Structure formats: C-alpha cells, structure tokens
Amino acid sequence: MSEKISLTAEIRTDVGKGASRRLRRTGEKIPAIIYGDEQSPLNLTLASNEVTKAMESETFYSQILNVVVDGSSSQAVVRDMQRNPASNKVMHIDFQRISANKIMHVNVPLHFINEEQCVGVKIEGGIIAHNIIEVEISCLPADLPEFIEVDMAEIGLGYGIHLSGLSLPKGVTIVALTHGEDHDITVVAVNARKVVTEEEEDSVVEAAPAGDAEAADDAAEDSGDDE
Image (tube, rainbow, N blue to C red; front, side, top):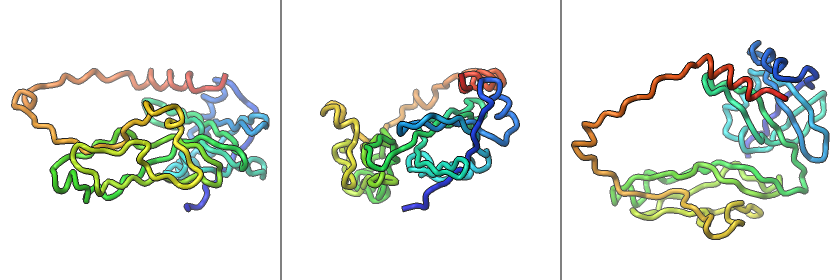
C-alpha cells in the first residue's frame, strides 16, 4: 500500500467566477471544494505546486487523500477535476469526504500484466485491445484497492476478459455488474492484426484546422468557475 497523499488547503472566502479566475491566473493557487459526510461544504484553495506533485502518483485519482484544513484532516477522494482544454491546467477540484463505515463508489485503475507473454500475442500473432483502463467499484474505505490486476498470460487470439472475469479483492464489487448481465462488458481482448490494403495506405486524411487556444482558455475558465 502506497503512503497516503496529504494536501494542505486554506478556506476560501472570496468566491465567484471573477475571484476564481483571478486566483488561477496567479499560477500559485487552485480553487477547490470539499463536501459530503453530512458536513457543510467548504470552498478551498490549494497550492498549485503541491497539487502538481501529488498528481504524479496514480493513486491521487483513485485513493483516499488527507485534506488538511486549519490543522484538521478530512479523509476524501477526488470526485471531479476540471482542466483547461487548451493548456490542460487544473482549474478546479471537487473533493468528497468519506466515512469509514459507509460504502463508497470510486474508479480504480486496471493494471494489465503479462502482456508480452500473452498466448494470443506471442504465439498467435494477435494484438491486445484495451476497451477500458479503469473500473468503478463499491466497497468500504478499508477495502479500497490501489488497482485491479488483469492477467493476460493465458488469453488466446479471439478471446478476452469481461468485467465478471476480473479477480477482485474481498469486499469489492464492480458497480456495472449490479445493473445486470448486459453490463458485463469486455475489458480487454486479443484481436487479429488488421491487414492494410494499398488503397488505405495511399489515403490521406485532411486535418481539422486548429482552434483558437485563447478563446478555448477563456471559455473553459468561465465554465469551471464557482457560481
């Protein structure tokens, strides 16, 4: 188990679209909110450099974090993150508090192992197609896994692994499977390699014109601001 990530936040009293825009444009702070667990929501600011460092870890997006506000620590998960489509900078983060005795829903990453030894690839010449790279699970916070492993070693050409075929830790349920068998989608498959014809090789796809990055930047900021 990785060491739990902690973020130090400050309470934000100056709220609204204009305030959030000014805050972001300094480049030093990121607006955020924390809510849930029958407590009042709090508008926060986070140090941009601290968030950037924390985001280097895959667990930032799927594990329980310590969000420290005025010396008081709350257990929370990232419920939503808004990014600027032009620059990919983080514009706003939503944290949801969690309770130790309440079932939580969260997306966790899938780790595909033994792909190089996969029968359908190594022996039968196929290619692996990943349909999803994370899955929504429900569990108690104490049972939350960092990731779920998907072993590809014995998967042959033309076969795959469905959600129901994933090996889950004790106490963990895949949310989609609670909605019926028709939600048992294919996670990963080994497909035959496509044979490219000469006509396809010679075809040219015209690229779409680049958008106005500055306009996208302003539009994204407006959509991500607090009401």
